[in-house]
Image (cartoon, rainbow, N blue to C red; front, side):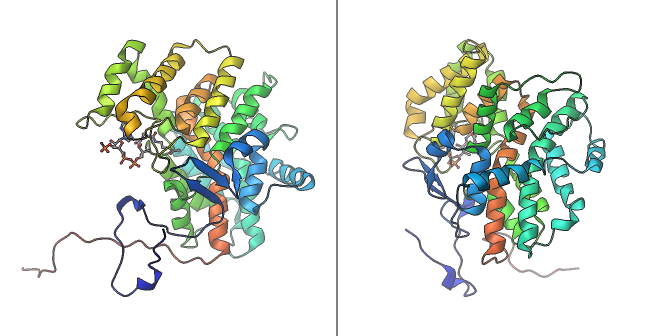
Length: 397
Ligand code: ACO
């Protein structure tokens, strides 16, 4: 049911809804979620079908333009994105201002925000062509920047993107190859990487997308808005959860400690939560988690890691939580981040990079929402508050 309160605006009434549990701040035609039934549709297409039959770039096209590309559009779109993957050479210098042990999300936030200082020719938000070029640039450059963040942290030279590689192959090439040794990209891992990006591509008005919209509603440029989204994504209750899953597995340490940590998660006096479990919207299984689990099984089999002790621990945790009354009663199923963390670790991506990969995958969603808002009936976002401070008083001096 929708209660439209627009008519009350300016008449002294407003709704109070901490955490925006039941407040819609906009209309959107991009993504539909039915959390109770575990349904997620992008432009009407179920996520399961997209994960099975589409690529990440096709999904980007769908989110941005409303339709999956025809064969001709696909070729053109892939060509455009491929030819925007390089970053301005001076942007490489920018990295050297950061400490090598900076958190990758700190660098990502700064570097993506800094794109607005390099691409002045696409900053006019009232020009649809500028908006489109910014969208292409952001989608294309995110994996390049993500890989540069990693290379910088380990002191290796940056790798240039290669135009003959696909989006996900290119990312893996820039992450793991070096100028001394270029290994071919494993197709199973490239497909898994593509699926990870695709399954994160959009999720309607989550905290980071709402942040992008709120920042964008002021007329800020798209690079600045996406940097704001990256900052919001960083937190462990949102995109930082896949990193937190691996940290939690480290903390649990050994198989026999699992029951102890399950009890800690249930204890209301203990702030510990099972990371990678629960979701604000899904009160049944997250459909992305189902696809991610399939992908996880494929990757572990491909890499022969089915018996890795930490990964076995994760599977046991999943099993216990799915049977435990506390988690069952509260509909706390494993979410997409639980499995993405396990896959990324298996691929050899360091834990600190996990949220950067989430940000790369989420970029088309952020930019599609920004586009929809700027191209539509945009009004500056300005939430109200319930004031709980002092009544008016006089300064006695
Ligand atoms: N472990 C233990 N208990 C939990 C967990 C958890 N992971 N998640 C929720 N609960 C409990 C709460 O304590 C609460 O219990 P109560 O009813 O007895 O008080 C109940 O389940 C409802 O939880 P809320 O915090 O009210 O749910 P909310 O919708 O506000 O939070 C959230 C959702 C933030 C995802 C939460 O489940 C959580 O912290 N999970 C772990 C972090 C995580 O995995 N985040 C990733 C989200 S998915 C994404 O960003 C792609």
